Image (cartoon, rainbow, N blue to C red):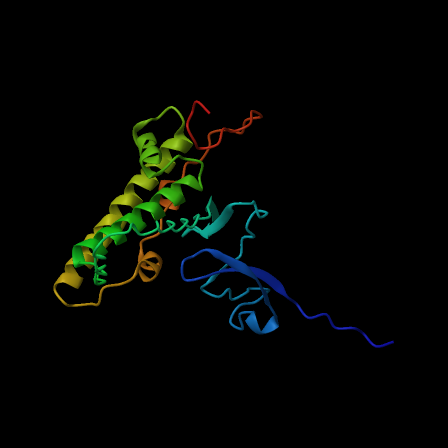
Length: 217
């Protein structure tokens, strides 16, 4: 009998330039790392290894920097306003169409800051917090070491992210680099370093752990 060779495959999950989930992608043996022993897959930069949760009506999934998928509402397009019938008059006014204008540098910078803030909040939400501000409040609360460690990590990460953004803004203003889009900026941001603030538990407990959200939940 001839032995049937089975090709190794792996499914990863892709996202578009807006980091919104696009669909599964099948890798084959050509995507295995030739430099590593064992089965080490070379995952494309626009893909995550983690599978997104099942689809929910009215929701979509956003690829966070920590390798997880975050659920958010699908934007609802606004319905166009129905034009009203023109009123009879002796002279019909001439409608003047406003000329389209480019956003100012200040408006573009504000839009980038809003996008970075959303990225911080969504990443904190993936760990069970309401937003980044809520996560940071646990940094000085020693009652639960695990929450305090996460709070300190998020606080340090938030500072590094904004320091990077304002340094980048100064370089753009000086003409040293071009102005990035939000899609280009997000992968450039520092990653939250939880390892530096890792807490080693003193002993195992049979009690279930609370999620890292609001303690009252």
